[in-house]
Image (cartoon, rainbow, N blue to C red; front, side, top):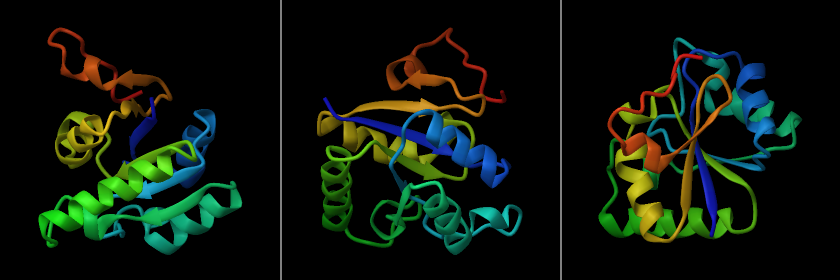
Length: 149
């Protein structure tokens, strides 16, 4: 089964963020933000992020046109993006990234994850304190993960 992580950059430093990815062996980061820029966290602007990841030996790819939270592309483009992402994740440990810290509040969980699950992926969310949360646990009432660690 292909494992795919999700992560939100939130207000972390680039070093903290890269550290979380390295902690979980991520080799490829798929950025699913529609607009890969942040006025509040410029370390996560597309070029700056790609540079930080490259220095850590992590590949960066932007998937925002196909998998972004503000879809502009038709459904076949989304399906092709999911297929491409899934194929890459079969070769490299992959994480999808957006800005939102809480996976319950982000399109990476509500839009992208269901499509990955249909393809047979196992999805886990990397939380701010480095712990992993299985997607199934995210769905269970009464289980409140510490999202602010």
